[in-house]
Image (cartoon, rainbow, N blue to C red):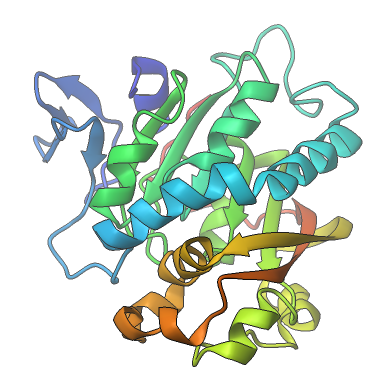
Length: 299
């Protein structure tokens, strides 16, 4: 749900002014107006064509799969945050004079599965899920009582105030380092999850799926020069899958945009074991240069 506190972190994507609720829309002082969907998310697109997002079929597969098969990754995210935070969220720049609850921003959030798990562990925090898929945002808008959902291109300028986020999540999603650093508060934390080279390797061997770049983990620091890495762990687990579950794993991922799934079931056994591998890393922001006027701040 987009509460007034969460809306307070948002900024007009056209002029960067603060937004406020106005019946079924969000408006800035310059009268730019953006719809609030009846499904619960804010549409902060600016008219240009957005990147291709998850289709309704991909979202349905993701909704079935994440709670049943990706629990180990959600637990690993919890453990990584506990290790970094020592059970106190957020531990860095807040004091009794700070305004508002801690804010978690999930970029490329999909259905909001990981954001909801993080919010469940940090009782005072609110969360904003960003994605370009309307089907995914319908799920993210109701993923957790303290979460709101926003349709926006995470490759562009994020409609968020400077330094508004205490934690930024980036799980299997594109990384816009400059914007992630701009919206992350000084001392805040970025958590990134990327697939390892052997992630779903058995499925990739059996089916004509997109390959995982085996050098992705090594290239990650170069893609985030605005940040300093503070921690890392690799999470692996084995999934015992039915044919239907295996097809859901394929159908929820990027290969679903490029591969005809209708005939793939015949190439799979009734059951198979599939390896999942994810590289988790945490980062803090390097000092920012002087910021140009106009973006606005939340605190």
